[in-house]
Length: 363
Image (tube, rainbow, N blue to C red; front, side, top):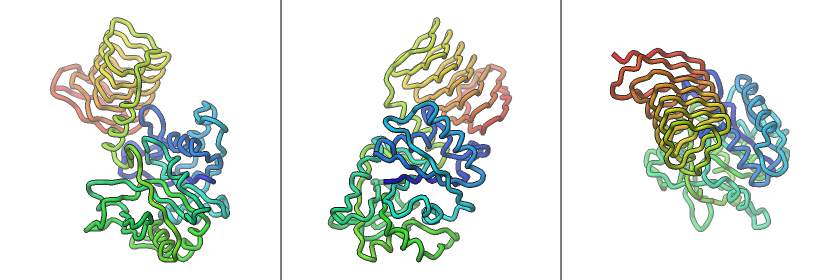
């Protein structure tokens, strides 16, 4: 079984966070999205992984996954990576088409690089049983409003129909970001015509499998699933990940109050501050005379002085100093500088891209 992680998109809905780097390298709970994807593939027994990239994203992904291997994040045998250019990106089915040389005739898992699964993807891979006639597996999740997603109709343990972004959904089973295919998907993709936006839809190829009599097995997602397409999705994914952490104080805590499930990583220093969990303070961070509230992740080597943050994500090597208003419900990129004049007033909600500099007036 091979793996295929899709990481060629531009992540326009996440701008300005994605203005300088691709979405799969955005961190949730101080771990890049693409690292979660690789971990899940490795846990499911996949070792050969193709990374579908664009000319714009390949450098970032190479660096990210080089760090992944160097840090030994994977359990068991280390995976190998092959980078596959998709330029321009023309849909999920097109990503499979340009990956054909890498995939050959082997079965494979296609994983959207911006998706998170609470309990991994092993169940979807295990459901691929060619000895029982299964040709493909779709991850499905119950959602309240599936009108902006692909929707599946399931009868007698088989997917019998797919509808892309229906105005009147025939079911509330939406397609999540993992697919398992055997080699038959390739002949369907070869016959595809582009859709209205010029993209080749994987749902059309799967429908062709179904119409041709192939067995597409539905597997519902256990636990939560997040498609991290927008800033509020990143913040909610961070919240969900922090709900899984256990108290672990490895850094230095001086004259401070730390309550609840809080992780303070090695090299971090907390002085004269209060931290209410769940929260994560990254390695080398400095927190002084500040408040860090629930569902907040502070990246590595971040400096927070005379400021208050809650329900926020602050990227690595950023600084927030002298901001009187509480910063909440905010997504702050890497290497950002935010300075205020210290006057207390209400709260700020910020979405700030990498390498930005802000001076906030509290008047």
